[in-house]
Length: 204
Image 1 (cartoon, rainbow, N blue to C red):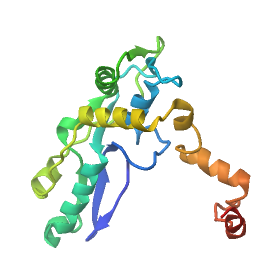
Image 2 (image 1 turned 135 degrees about the vertical axis):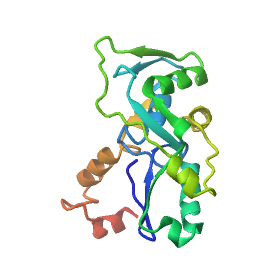
Image 3 (image 1 turned 30 degrees about the vertical axis):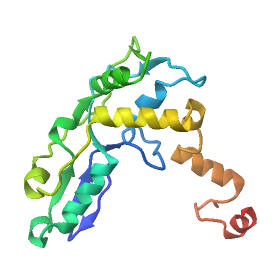
């Protein structure tokens, strides 16, 4: 997730977020762990093969949403001279994973899940392995508590608990672009993506 927050003119650059939250982004760079877990579930409540479209070699840095908040707090609590005009990658060096490693974690977490790679799959050009040594040394208060395996277990249990299925996950409820399109079609958003207050009031 390439989100920036300026604190004393400090830029906090987030790794790919993972873990339970109230919404999902439809950019697969942002929710790679969530998508791998949910795609290992079948609509009928069972489990099916997890199809990987690339060869699994691209790298992604992973960080749990709770650890993201720990980074913001650490930056807010830090002395001004430590963070002013500084940029910090937020994550942990050990939490850089290849897609195939994340898929393996999910396979070991989700019962009866099998990983399959597309026969003609090649490497995804979007690959990045990030260094996080700077934030570890500059902000000692930042102490991440999660890793990808714990996050995958949390996601699996949450999806089972709330009955999330593939159609719902792939629909407008969780896909930003699809949700915006739905609002446009309903007239709740106008062509400039501004809220139609009159129709919104009628809906309520």
